[in-house]
Image 1 (tube, rainbow, N blue to C red):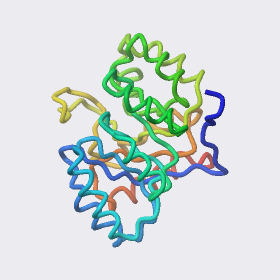
Image 2: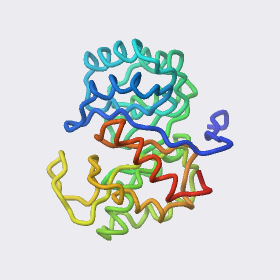
Image 3: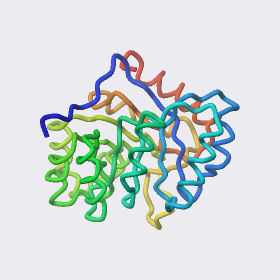
Length: 242
């Protein structure tokens, strides 16, 4: 759509991520917002139903948080929630999965002329590029890319090698990639994880400096105290590109 423009910025940002996956203590992270004086973070409310999301928003409003520049939406997001995020937390970047169940949310975002980016998940379906063409561009999950292609060499990721060169990248997810496979919460054995054990688990990002968006969001279950160390480590890896 011609009236939606990819996000641009004078510099790149690395945002700490408030994740809600099973291993993430999101209540603790909310408490850390004031402790570390965090004015803006990325939000991943993808494992919370509507009632739990309302609880989360209510708790966030009691903190010093001022902005959620990037939000990874659930497939059941409604129009009221989108307006709330845009007006209360100045959210300008949204991403969703390319799955069929997310198409209603995609249509809602498009109807509100919002920037929506499609994430590469574990499987690159035949219609993935068609979905990206409807949206503003890509949200690159670098751990999925590195795990499924660079390390595992899975055939379904061959097409993504070309897609990533063709479309604007508005935001990105940075998770951990370990040296050996381990069991993830979804029951799969993968190199990629949402829990970082060692700072070297993000060293793989040095391979993707040609594909960095304006905003990189940490998709980690680790506490904000630990994520602050990850952020500094990433800055040292990516250097002048940040």
